[in-house]
Image (cartoon, protein in one colour):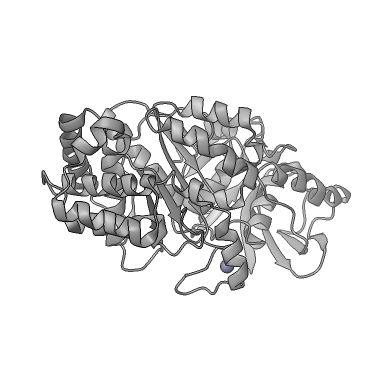
Length: 447
Ligand SMILES: [Zn+2]
């Protein structure tokens, strides 16, 4: 597949189009405007990609510049080439529709740089959106809402693939946005999102690339922004830097806000395990969630695209998530983007969450996810049959006490959403359905 990107040639100050094809083989060729410096591109971009866990593909990469006559291209087209290569080699999920403009140099850490001194040409009409360095955004595109200013490649990916403007990555604290996110969800995912947001339950999203897992994490954060009317931090750690001290810093930065662990399937096992203790401790100080692809290629269980992985590979991939790791999450949400998904009506959605939270605060002074020790069992208020059902499930599945508590807390939140004092058996059954042990994850339950 060929990817087309608009960019800016500094030498003759015009907009040019870069077409990039990524095919089997191993070479890099730039046609159209010969430049001896172009030989450095694979090496340089490889270094920039590495910082985020991507790489220059072991493929034949052919780039064609139109118009073909003009000044030689310099590093100002780094970003355009990088985006086309990352999309073309499928390291990024599917790109948003419409023509786009990418401009900026990349340093070896993947930061997007660029200066705002030369006048920029008019963008072609076919350009609907794009990414430019922050300073260029301020100087030339401040009135252009769909051309965003970016700091690094990760922000570019979030915008290119998920449509998320770069406001919440890393340690940056951001202002609450006035507009609600546009979310199209199946009724099951919408219901799950409502439960998770109401009770503050940590959720583990599983789904193919491009199904909006990051958007769901961001939606949960926006619920808190909206209900607290305050700036709530949103922190997304970068996996390759997940040393113990780096993780500690992420937890500090996310205090009182949201910590989102994305693509945890790609994290080193050591980093995953290093998260277990801090996650357990942090349930009272922040909200956390995580997301992963279901398999290495990302498309296991997808309805229209076929998964390239063997059953053994899928199992090995999912086994990376040990039961003690999975126990940190009260629910697992499987996400599939479907045509018939319906739009989330935010005002109503928020109102239901607000009511459910008020019930919890009145009863126990905290959200259900944070119930523990003596107040846990007195706050749950399980109907006798519901209590029997959860114990029956525990014995049948050989689940530990922690799993029982998770299921009961989630069921409590569902009863709160229903406005009921007592948790009914159906709430327990639904909470069991959301628990990882019922979700086809290959990790065996703890004894
Ligand atoms: Zn696969």
